[in-house]
Amino acid sequence: MYIIIVGRHPLYVHGEQVASYTAKLKDPQWKFPARFSPLAQSLFLPMAQTKPFERYTAKEALSHPWITRRPGPLPLSCVEAIAFEQSRNKFRAALPVLFFASLSAAETVSEDYSQLVSF
Image (cartoon, rainbow, N blue to C red):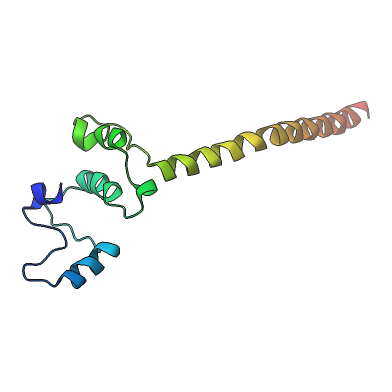
């Protein structure tokens, strides 16, 4: 993708030693020229993750707005989807506590109001 947009490899420099190139692959420092749009970067970076479970799947990549040319939310990688689901589960677990706490607070306010009105 980078080569298609920019016209050259993002990390390899002609005449570079294999060891130097391999080191760059382990910890890439991406530099994007101006013609590499932020939307294209938002597709490229998840696809270029070194850890496979952090990479976009083919389905996620193909549903990205840069590919589909339709506006919409960016797909979540597997790791992002798991983190999102965990935070949603924490929120759902907290809802009953918040609900009953609000009922208890409402009862206290109601009792205080009743005492004020009875004077």
